[in-house]
Image 1 (cartoon, helix red, strand yellow):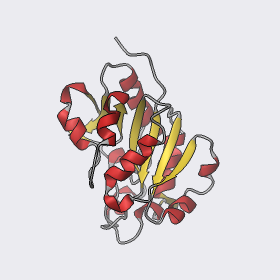
Image 2: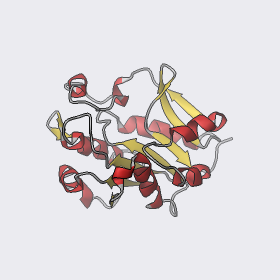
Image 3: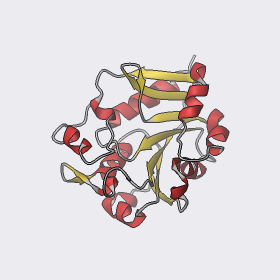
Length: 207
């Protein structure tokens, strides 16, 4: 039996310092479009009811890279002034911006430019039609992003510290996590180093 289908919000993590990239990877371009804009466009094209983009390092440049997208009423900018404290600070900042209004939230990485709206919607559908409180994509039995968390785990997320995301929460609750298998890895590839862009150039999104 599936739960009552709650609206789901998205949280784009875009506050990091890109230390391995040699510059701000979120404003780097893939097929002439900034990486962060591609991610935000994908989120806005999906069934996510609201999207919070958590900015931090060089937030003015990242916001500029979004172009006119902040004009969409579904997209909200949150500045995490404590981004140097690690990823957990951005994870928490995003959730605090929407926890009162949404009983489930999807965390999206700001550096996954080939993710598609179809994948996001597929994960939303799988989550809403299950009794699980965590849902994530997998490729060859390896966990990928983005990840949906139900409100059951909001307190655990808000208690995170340091430079970690919510991986430990998933690891500690395997019985409450739904893995959705995908046959292709490409949409889930992220950008850590400048050379990673070479793997992504010229290949379109995969639904």
